[in-house]
Image 1 (cartoon, helix red, strand yellow):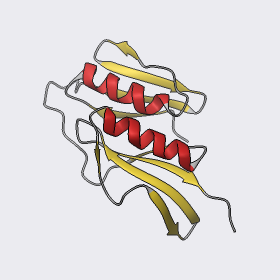
Image 2: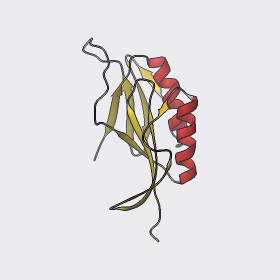
Image 3: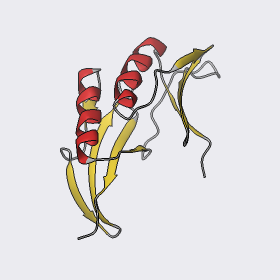
Length: 127
């Protein structure tokens, strides 16, 4: 459904360091800088961080979350740990199982160094 997701940043070097670490735990190669933005590519699409092109300061979308699919609970935990070690901050509940209407999910939430809200998710098998 999506070709790409882009979040804003105020510091390309800091964003590259943070996302290279977190996305690296998901098997995504290091991002490449293209003028005022950075791209990370996968077979499922692209993720990008960009300096605002309108010249105004970066702001965080209230109510926005970007979610990344993980292959296991361990990968979710590795993503979360890499994010904390790279300048992110934990938010919401600690990483763990959440029961929802679609079944059990193993989730972890972070805010990147610019304040963008992120989630790593692994769908647990049905009992």
